[in-house]
Image (cartoon, rainbow, N blue to C red; front, side, top):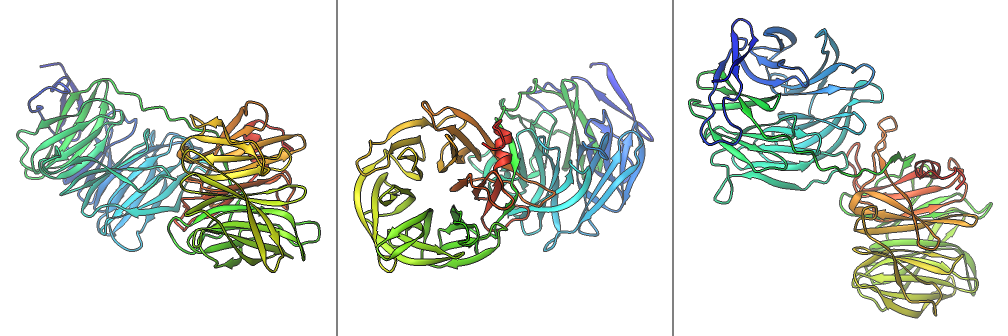
Length: 635
């Protein structure tokens, strides 16, 4: 037996043996009793605390330092978690969270690690159901901390509880999503942004813990013929290496699932009813503590583990924040899709943002984000506009949208700050999808595509009272397109192929055939979605939605189409505006607008958070884009 490491715990001593059990060796690890204060049930290692434990004991939450208990709160607590806090008030502090069983709330207590004194406290009361489990997530990029609460219905709510910018506790609802019934425990791997839920009779599920993460789940350890879980997922924990530890209390088995190494499991001989699990780092090993409910007492062992596998480095483009957002669309679901910015002629009304609701019609917003109009004209997918189009009976600023209800093109006049539906013109396509407009000197054109890759180009004509469209061209891309944008200066049109990249073709009816000029890759991750051109003077840039990475790539419109850079839009807690993800359409203008002297970028937001709401559109000051790309503010 290896030499012992002794830690003083009141009133007795705990002996942890180095090398008691080989990490992946067969056989049961040897456990030793761990004396704790009377009534202790659950415990959690203090992050960076070198042997310090947080313990729920009787009617108290205590911090156990060198065996001496320091009280933190009074009450019956369960489901403990903790994170170190950065920031001004949080420097050298720890945030502990726990369910207050009697009150049905989650208590948050921040204390100074050196003195043990409490510096901040907060209580969060779930609105609709009592909490069954809770856990914290530390977000490395900004230093904020969020809280996951799983309630008795199986619903999961994520709330921001620590704002690193202000250094204080906050309570900002972020999102909700369906979890699982009968959740016994939850834990988060901060490095990989993974949330784990233990559904007692089924197994362990993994979710995306990022603020803009999706709601899909993946099985990690399941019960049944195809799974490795023999009994029930009673408790779980994530160690500082990112490995997941799962307690199967019914089968008396402990599972070890590292992120990038083979899993292991050990029988728990001598423990009659193991029901709670805690882990703590110990050099090249992990200290594991289990609560045996039948005894009742805590048993500990030290297990050697292989060196930690580094988390796969994820590339994060530089981040900016949005300045404003529109009112959300009327209903949850994949609805908001594509915006277009209307810059009026002098004295012809105010700037407007047109946004498609692909379930219902066309929304019209002011620059303050308020909804001014809604035109229920069908399932509009993409929208674009031209500042002036001449018809036989007059001219008007004109918007066109792909209408999937009738495989048609819907046309709208923008007059004196309002939008009027002129009517629809048919196409020869089935399942229309993306659309953009091209204004030549003597004509106005609409490019419209279908999900099978076909494109058609139409010349607009007729009158405002009865507009017409004549097909002048047809071609196709190899697979599904959507976003496109025409450049009237160069008479070219840029076409997105969702899985491949960006094509360029001549915009005139007799123009050159499409050629692939920008291939999908690290900065342009499929799906390739919306695109728009920012032009100022002789310089122009193509902004493209890289939906697969929730970011935006910017290319110079010059030979070779060099990448200028990429960026993403993240949440701003101070303004209450969330980040942008799953973007379909976008539009940009270099025109000076009220509050946006260098221009405006508008982005569809596929996941509207802070709090959860139906999809909307985000407004981004071009000066922020220019700064992050290293462009001059006026560029």
